[in-house]
Structure formats: C-alpha cells, structure tokens
Amino acid sequence: MSATLVIIIIAGAVIAIAWVLGHWWDVHRRHPQAIRQEARDLWSRTGLHWSPPEYLTAQLLISLAITIAGIAVFAQLADWVSDKAAITDLDIRFDNVLHAHASPVGVTIAKAVSFIGGPAAMAVLMVAGAIYLLVRREMLLLYGWLVAFIGGGALDWALKTIFQRDRPSFPDAFVHVGGYSFPSGHSMGSLIGYGMLAYVIAHSTRGRRSDVVVAVCGGIVVLAIGFSRLYLGAHYLSDVLAGFAAGMVWLAANIIALEASLPKPAVT
Image (cartoon, rainbow, N blue to C red; front, side, top):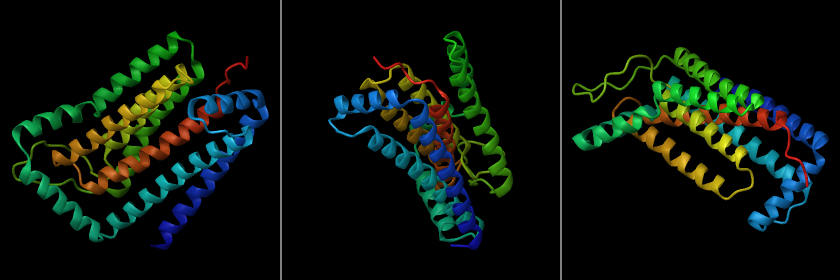
C-alpha cells in the first residue's frame, strides 16, 4: 500500500471519527429522552435489550465503520487502478467474459435497468423527492436531500476528472458512452439516490418493519444497476466497486449530518 493511500485513509478516518463523534455528542446532549425512546423501540422490534448509551454507541460504531470502510475500499481500488495493478487484468477478463456471453434479451434488460440509475432518472427522483418534502415542509430533510444528490454528482465528476480512466472498448459495443470510467457514476449515483429515498421513507415511517423491506429492495435495485453497467460493457468491475464505495461514504456522511440536525420525535 502506497504512502499516499495510507495518508488518504488516515485523513478520511480522522474526519469520519470527528464527524461521527460530534453527531453522537450532539444527539446525546440535545435529545436524551428521544434516545431512550429509540432504544425502547429497538427492544420491541428486535428483542435486543440495549441501554440508551449502548444504543448510541452501536449507532456510532456502525456509522464510523461504514464511512472508514468506504474510504479504505475506494482508496485501495484507486491505488490499484492508478498503478495498473493485477486488478486491471481482472477487469478486462471479467468484461470480456460478460460480453462474450451476453444475449440480445439480456442487453435489452440491462439497458432498462441501467436507465433507472442514469442521470435522467436520478434527476427525476431528485425533483420529485424535493417537491414531496417541500409540500410536507420538511425543510431540513429537503436541504439534505438536495445536497446528497447535487454533491454526489459533483463528487462523481471530480473523481472522474482526477483519475481519467478510459472506458472499456469493444468492436461490437452494446452502448456508446462518453467520458471517463472510474468510478461508475451510475453505481455511485444510484446508491446515493435510492439510499436517500430509503432514508426518507424510514424517516416518515419510523419504527415500522417496512423500513427493512424498503432498504433490502433498494439494495437489490442498486446492485442490479451496477451489474447492468458491467453487462453492457460501459464499466470495469473496479469502476462499479469504487462507485459503490464512494457513494456509501457520501450517503453515510449526509445521513449522519441529517440525524444530527433533524428534530427527534416527541417522547410520549
């Protein structure tokens, strides 16, 4: 692992720790009764008998683990891609196998799945979600929603510009896409977009088992979108994995900020 990669991981980890600790302390200080209520809700839903401090600590550790893991995975993939390590050979072989075994029906399905993770679909989702939150006067959630989408798009553009990796090339390509390849914008954008959608639904139906169903369905959709980009030959495997990693970090950062800012439900 290069010195640059180590520095990136350490810097990211320090920022993540500071952010999550700040969230933990702020919520604990401002909403002690709400935290106790959330812990009791967790008991009733899962049977896990955690005290409020244990509940907050678990929340802290999970958020921190997701953020640091995403930073580490992205940094390692970026290091391999920049150094043209063995993973680039794996990328090419994997894409060649998928391309050789692709079928016309599979390509049609992959194009449809890819579309729901593309810029047009994400723009529609962003606008529709913004209108919904504006009508409900959920202004903090609206700001977080817009920051997640717009910031995610800007981050994707910046990362592509930094790494400038060429896309896979096939004589009989299924799709013709411009721009750079690393990381996958569809993978990153769909994880952020559908992840935020799942968060908004969970926020609106707090404490219901349907939250799990929504999260699982969203995860399946995001994975399908990532695979569709591979199937169509628009990206390498490392592009898709890096897109998921970067998207997870950005999504986690936005959710942490929202959780620290949104008012907690009243305790009855």
